[in-house]
Image (cartoon, rainbow, N blue to C red; front, side, top):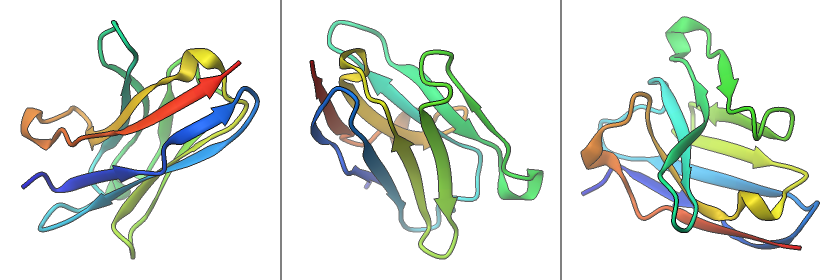
Length: 118
C-alpha cells in the first residue's frame, strides 16, 4: 500500500487558486524531505517544489516556473503535506504527486489532477 495519498485537484480558471494535500500514513513521517511533482500530458514528471526535513529547518525550493506562485508546507500533527497554488496558468495543468525528495519509486500514488482553463 502506497503511504502517500494526494487530493485537492480540480478544474479552475486561469488566475485561480487550489490547495493540494498529501496525507502520509503508516510509518512514513511527513517531516522527511518531501517534494511535489507533476506530470503534464506528453511530458516527463518534474519536481515543482521541495522542503527539507523538519530537523534541517524545513527550507523550501521551487522550480522557476512556479516560483512566487506556489507554496509548499506541512502540518506535522496531521502528517500532511500541502501545495498552495495561486495565479494558476493553463501550463500548470498536470497530475500532481507527492513523494519523498529524492523520490522513491514505490511511493508514487495516483496523484491528483489539476486542470487550468484559459
